[in-house]
Image (cartoon, rainbow, N blue to C red; front, side, top):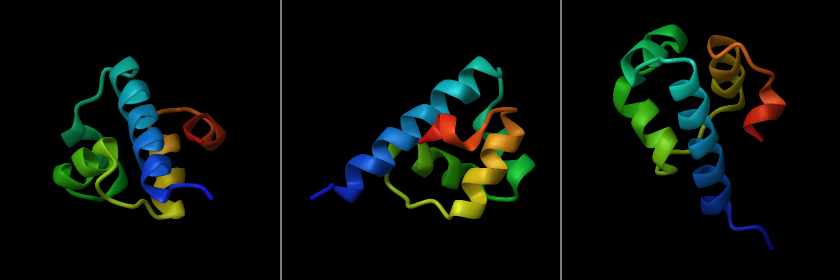
Amino acid sequence: MIDENLIYIYIGSKIKDFRDKADLTQESLAEAIGVSRASIANYESGKQSIYISDLYKIADALNIEIKELL
């Protein structure tokens, strides 16, 4: 059985890596996708689940394919 928490931690670390490579702050990414900076911080740490629609918005804001986050 897959541990759901591990999935969110993995995706969160990918978001952070790509955000850092894009030289974006948590605040600027949050503004780009319409969520709070705290949500981005929680996504990156795996503390908050992510809607599929937000994953698409994040991928778009980072100029990557969604599959790169999965």
